[in-house]
Length: 77
Length: 472
Image (cartoon, rainbow over all chains, first blue to last red):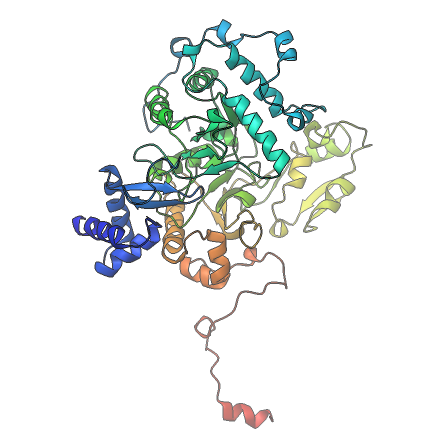
């Protein structure tokens, strides 16, 4: 779990983009940890959301994940 | 089976939880309403008040007048929200384009959906609606509320939001329209902690499941739609609130093929009640319909005189698969040809009833026209039993999700993925054997192809032997 969380944060920090689809996170994690299962990655994402590292972001119709503090993460006023 | 809640149910008493007095709720007269003008000029919207139909503009004006007359400390967001909303809508009518932008906020802390962030792009002109977020409230099965609950939600929403609501949105949720960012967490707290009420799904989540009135009020219900809807809502809480799907995913539950929630057109996974034995016929009641003793269609369509009931014209000739006959005072149905259109049962409900061996048909892939045009669902499981604890249904759902989450591209609906892969491949992956029931239009889409291993003896041949008999 900790490895997966680390991989997620590393990916989110190093990417040029600031918002990610879950699928992109999944692919990035599986590149580092090939046997990581989708459910485990989802649980790790949820844990990172709950501790405030990641945030959800809505495009209006689909939901993305972002790193808190990178890009537009607060109210888009 | 009596309803057994999975969480302790709280009894809500409006008298204890109300915010407003009766005087505050009825704080204007008809006369005042008649003379009331909102602060913006809205000629096109006022056109919508004309004609015989109820108008959201009239409703919104009532809300606006009500807010004008409330004391300052009796509401937590701007007094003018409704007036500004109407004003901005008039501008959109004038210019032919929307002034709402959405996105950003997705939910309250820890939730990946349920709140749709909405902002005005004319915040200087309409400051009250600079933030105008929508909250989806997970409706109870079949939308059965008690009035104490509804009145309590309404009071809370007048106090913390615009007071505008939508019963119900296309997703099925009760939709609360318009509040500010600061109010989201308090509203969530009040809904969940005071009212025992969860918020619904939005974004790349399982959307709030929705069902017809089912066995609660309908004799046609072929499985307990409310029980299945409730069970899956509770069982898939994680999918509802924590987005990990490629895009949205909707379940809807119709108790019978009449399809009152139109699940076949509106959900990625549609559950429609069906039966696999024979339609039950009460021949005496058929005779009574023919003799005019019973009113056909249970008295519906009685607005004009259609003449005497004609079973041949109104039932037998309208059967889509022509599997019925009425001869010598006896109704016959060739049940294996029945396509479950429900017409005969609807016309003569006292004489005909669906069979007793009931369950669900599961159809997949309906969607609205964002890509490729609108699509109706495709029948994938012709029949499955639907009885608690519904393990067979859950197993099927998870197989479909697993495939879609693995192969689906970002923002690709299940229906689009099925199209991209083709039905034979899709059936193979989820392990459902092809069946004639899946053919939408005979001879137009012959998508079932045999493979060599499916055919006894295979089909490899000795080409020399073949050529000996068939010249090139």
